[in-house]
Amino acid sequence: MNNSMVLTNHNTDNIIYMTEIIKPKENPKKKPKLNKDGTISKRHSNKVAGVSSEVFSFKTKEEINAMISVFDKRINDAPDADKLRIARRNKLLFILGINLGLRASDLRKITFKFFFSETDNGGYEWNEYYSLVPEKQKRQRKYIKLFFNDTVRNAILNYIEYYPISDIDDFVFVSRIGKGKCSISEPAIWDILNKTALEAGIQQNIGSHSLRKTFGYWIWHEAVDKDKALVILQQCFAHSSTQITMKYIGILDDEIKDTYYSISLGSDGVSFG
Image (cartoon, rainbow, N blue to C red; front, side):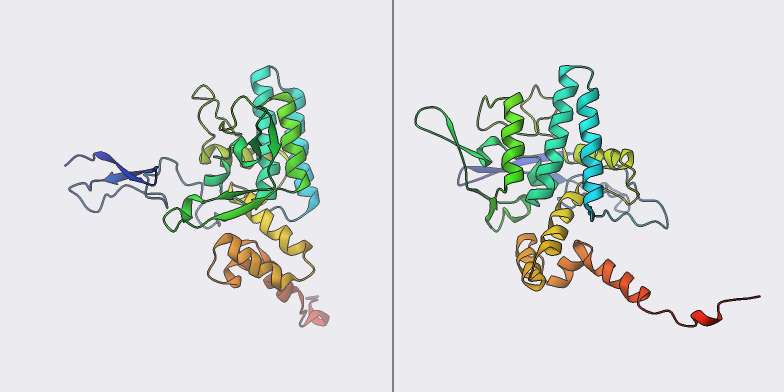
């Protein structure tokens, strides 16, 4: 039996969900590799045998500034208007990503409606917050409230000085394909961040999850009450425990490292001469 794909529409409260149904082959041992959302994986894994494929957060201001420096260099070196717009888009993606803590599946679909509401006179006013149903919580209809700090506000306002809003429903992070009506893809976000990190001289593995992990790490790092911050982050990330949140944002790794470094047994006898 050949593989075939059936798209079914489930229309509930005017929201249409598209489900991809994969019919199995005759040989059950040769099933297609699927992503977490059930779609067929079209991207080869970058995992190297014996090397962890985990992606990490940016845990120092120097790393964050190094990323921004590379984005700025690409803006300054852009050879034409199209590449200049892409370079500015990518910098905005990074800044919003580490300040909003969204998954790439949600970050890529941000529209200007997140940040602005239309006024009666045809203008726009800044939103205090935006209520979002994340992709992974659509079935449960769980809303989260996104609030926008000064960095997010200033970044958006600066960006639209170069590229004014034509439609409040337009995607902020537009793909180069689709004549401006398609949002950037998740693999594209991974590729942008990974290549920028390499150019910035950052050694650890960086991917799209690094943005969300960085948001969580710095919320915890800057908090006066770190236990409370972990509980709040657990809710933001929909984790089942604070231990999972700690591991996700890299706190457990730091504590394990500190544990090993806390002892130095037999240090007086390390000479073999």
